[in-house]
Length: 367
Ligand code: NAD
Ligand code: IPM
Ligand code: MN
Image (tube, rainbow, N blue to C red; front, side, top):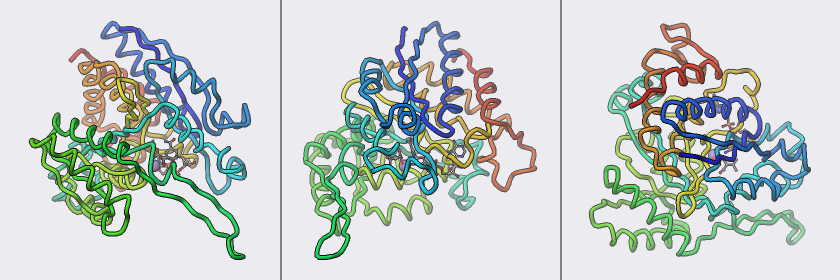
């Protein structure tokens, strides 16, 4: 197969981790007889430095004309980087939100799976880590608080800031359908997370999700309030299969879910539009504190590339090969520093970003 991929390495550790994912993809192509053409474009802070804006029309066009987009991460230190002295619409994150909207990427799939090899890196009680977990967070990505009206202005002599959490029925329905469809291919359970005891947007969310569930009698649906969900994720993560939730809740819960897999460096994501197009990126950020040190964990990005093969190109065997390589490398005891925690100095073999990429490449084989 011939694949046209637009790459957005971005800022901070972005270029380091995308380089590893490309190496792994190239090896997959060599082994399975495919061909990838890459086009690299700027977005985020590097685009601000080059063009004065975080997202150019050229970058949007390059993304639209590709079969899929592979991204690293964007942004800098939000306290110290000069990018955060710019007005909000010119900052790196505005680029990411802009491209999600421009490409219609309303469904963000964030699978949180505890590799058995990483049990000791899981910060939960031994019993929970022993049981393991395998959940998929289905996060709505182009609505809610992120895209509602916002302002900061003086009202009655006081500076007042306002963000609006807004959802239309159709936006809820299409993400709910995605969640139920995916659940059918998994363990047939959806837990929809909201704050229906307080928010109107959540009450509408619950009503629409209930309606959609009528078309999926084979899938079990439960509703859970978001504060309880945050607690349940660390008490008993095995109870979750598909977690369906709105944009902001999904952002926060997916960082929490990433940590119980051992590290935020393990959590991939796929942001899908209708059809086969998608943008694939790790769930974590640009980690400015460790950028340029060759210590970032590239696995979330490599697993995002596997999701790209699976969701945009239907290449399941090839995606399995990447996931198999990750499993092998972990089994053999290789760890980037984020996965070591208190196990530092133990029998694990500490490796850097590039070396982890090399080890993964060596383990890509026909499955
Ligand atoms: P972050 O996810 O970048 O980092 C949080 C912590 O996790 C840091 O200590 C970092 O070193 C560590 N970490 C993250 N990824 C890692 C990896 N692959 N390997 C090892 N350690 C890793 O979050 P932050 O510090 O709050 O945000 C930094 C910047 O990233 C901000 O500008 C933020 O807006 C941006 N951001 C971008 C994306 C994205 O591009 N999708 C996502 C989240 C945050
Ligand atoms: C993510 C990030 C983004 C989000 C930021 C950088 C805008 O945190 O992809 O999880 O909040 O969606
Ligand atoms: Mn986030």
